[in-house]
Image (cartoon, rainbow, N blue to C red; front, side):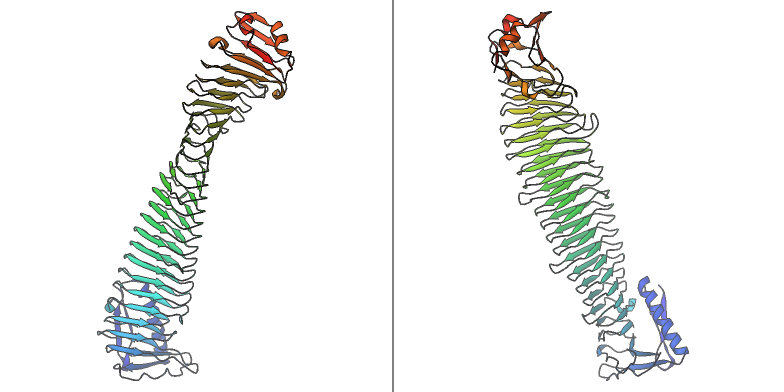
Length: 570
């Protein structure tokens, strides 16, 4: 370990050992200053032989240094300088315990026994002091403390104080304004109740505790595992290379993941948790309101409890995003996450899929899901409704979507450039409205009565719609639709008011599958049905009728006679 030598009394010298590089560096700077003052004959040395000795006020010494040497154990009060004299630079040469009450501008270093120091400007603690205690009061501004490699207790209540901890397991506190505390390789505990403080854990394990009065603190977890308890306001926490566990009850804070795993329990409000640049496993449990959470590049597991509300979740990392949502009014955006798995036991959830696979399981309350926008296969979705109402809008991607309806009813919207949706339900009905592209809705596995509406845009594509065993309504609208009614008693609806240009040609594949199937020509007039049947043509067993707006409807494997009494208009 490096040693530093300073002048003593009566031409003697005092040598101390410093194991902490920060302490050694500061001690050497002080030694150099004392040596320079000695060479310039501007060093005045006063000895305090025992605690009963009355220490005189520093002597006026322009440009020089007043050194005070304390050798015996006990309690000492260092007088402040007056009249322009420099404050004492105190050198401890003790082996017995010493307590120093210094002035706000005192510099104190040295010692070979236990030391407690209150209110200095600069403190350099050598190894000989053992477990030292240093207290910077509110009167201190810009003080600097460098601890040793034992288990020190150092607190800063002033403004802009700096603490360099040693390699021991230290208790470090900041209750002032703008203080900086830097840990080393020891396992340190940081207690913060001040404003605008900055803390860095170092290489060891760390525990950070931010009190309710802490405002605007900045904390860096280090190479070791960190445990952080934050009850403050506006705290910013940066995770470290090892595991970081954060419990937040404060508000307006920000937490950033790094290389290590990140575990967050958030009962505060309006906090931001961003693991987008993190590489470790990310677990989050949210109890509070108005939080924003961004997933990471490893798996993210998130639980929004029944007290969580108005949360905003982004899946922007490369890891899978798994969410169980029991909260209310939460918004989830899948974004670039390769897989988004959401179990919704909350209320009024709004979910946007991303470019990857989306899996959603609904609960007892309503939810709105907007599908994915990825490439074929990557942008697929599996949607399972619960007992609450579900609205699903397919995204711009070309992947396939499977929807299992629930008892609360399901509303489906196709995408603008085509959708491929498979729907089934045995408990609740569905309303499907195709988009403007080439749409496929396969509801053949459904046993409920559904309303299925094809595309109205003849220029953009065609609809392929298959109903199930329920009593369904299939609307060809104005686009080119292929309709399969299934085994139920179905209504095939063609609405003149929804024809948006062109001459659509619709096909009904299985009209004769049910003897009670009907065709309704809406907004064509009461005589339209009779006129269409009168002009019907049959080719290869398929009958085609042409309506007054040139819409054609072909009924496969159906004769004109089989259509009689089943086609109506108004």
